[in-house]
Length: 410
Image (cartoon, rainbow, N blue to C red; front, side):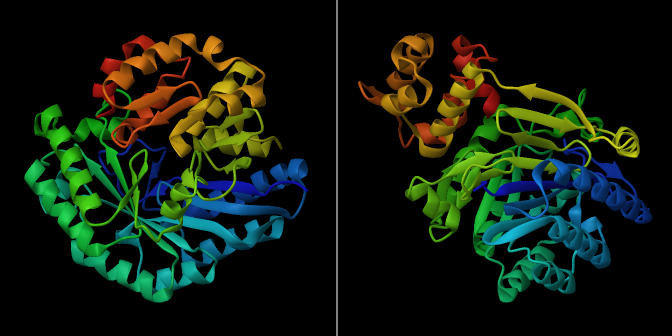
């Protein structure tokens, strides 16, 4: 029996630009553009179904963007109806959508629940009005609190809040106030991201005044204060920037060693193929990755020609698959069992990864990992730098530059 699929649907439209944003987006107030986009999404699904078959089970669905709630109620209903015509959303799955608090009402939340969404992710970033103004995303805290309260009353299984540290005009003191408000809000999950200022790559970031960005030292203080504040309030550090209440399914999965991870982040769902739909979306099928066209023009043109809008792909080698397995074990279970890897990939771990183990030995001296004859264990301290530990096994990176890498991830 085929394993369930994971679906990611990219809705690129936003009414206004957030200056920090690095996502693929289309800024427009012309909502009629969404109707055309949904017609092309339907064409893409039809082409995908030719490969996977009608009615294939789906255990995970995520609508991201952009701003998925840019769509009207009717458009969301049409989109979900189209998905259900072609796939079977299984009971107990994770069905989530990113929500811009500025674009939803209590009624909209009711609609999302009726359509089958059981998880919401609110983009908050920071509650400080000055910071919000500096990044062109003003949303009163009262608005977010009211929406989260409504979501709880409706019965959504999990509510996530996104935060970003390192934004212009943020200080350790101001961000501590935001953390206090988040703890009062008490979302089920929190995603805490470091802002990466790359104006040469992401045009909206050119509107940010570089002199207003906090220093590296202040960013480190914000991260440290965040860990203290959130864990002090009872949140579990799941890993890779994510926190969850002890009763949340993600925290339970971490305790039970059942965490999985894909392009949608950590998940409680078993590892499965990911079909990515929409402009710029990245999917994973077996030992391959693919990405759709990054512009609407290219995306539409491919579908007009009756072909999938994939513009690039990657077929993993035996070494890639081995390293993916190792990296996922570190990021999800916080450990490596040599024997398990050896049996699954027919290698001698200590010989194959001799160079990487030398680097890990240096991390062990700093208390980030412990190493014995049976494997590697990430320590409680090391778990906060689990991304950097996993990067040791990424062949595309310079593994001997681990010290510089630690500073970059902060």
